[in-house]
Amino acid sequence: MLFHSTVFGPIRSRRLGVSLGVNLEPDNGKICSFDCVYCECGLNADGRDDTKIPTRAEVKKALENKLITYMKGSEPVIDNITFAGNGEPTMHPDFDGIIDDTIELRNRYTPETKISVLTNAWHLSRKKVFTALRKVDNNILKLDSAIPETVSKINRPVNPNFNLQEHINDLAKFNGNCTIQTLFLRGATCDNTTPEEINAWLDALKIIQPKMVQIYSLDRKTPYDTLQAVPLSELKSIELKVRKLGLNTLVVA
Ligand code: SF4
Image 1 (cartoon, rainbow, N blue to C red):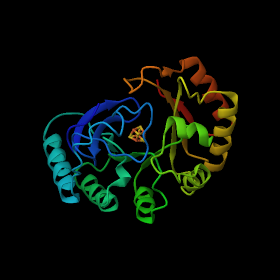
Image 2 (spheres, protein in one colour):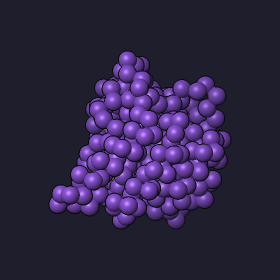
Image 3 (cartoon, rainbow, N blue to C red):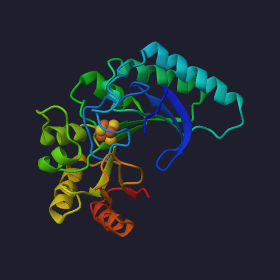
Image 4 (cartoon, rainbow, N blue to C red):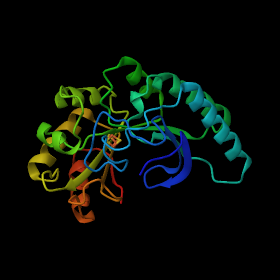
């Protein structure tokens, strides 16, 4: 499922309440540095015809127009302006400037709204990306496994030099001011719910010390129909293990 505009919604989100989405990728294509087997946007190989991304000025204009129109109505307050969309938002070359514009617009039109970024967190080594993420209210960072072979099978980083340990160390640089988001699933070639997987993942959480750990499973159509959702009872038992580390956690069902 692709989002066919730069600003979309607001939609009611399981995790983010009334959420106004911002898509920094093409209207009809996906751009991401991962190629997750469960990606709701489809595979990177699909929709390659459209590679046009919105400019910083276009994003600002679209967001401002939407906020002005929305504020004239009697709709509920927007809980979050959420950077999500058709791929990885931090890959946009002007991501940092777009975050500055968004903070300015949020402060002007809807100061109680939070700004959230859903990211695969692979681009934190770029200083301007990390600095921009530190400015927003909610960094929601993906970590589906702490075992490199499993990341290769589930998240399938495009860069062959992806280094999971460096990635976990980068996540720890938020000094706990971040949310870790983990999708548990089983498939023909991958399963991130085995005891070995859970133990490695818990060890990574001990290093990262996030303020929140969101746990969820498949909920929508995925590119591969062999993937299976993990039952709620199992997610709850994983949640309990996270709680025992003294971390806040939430199963999103
Ligand atoms: S990181 Fe997100 S957008 Fe990128 S492939 Fe994975 S699920 Fe899709």
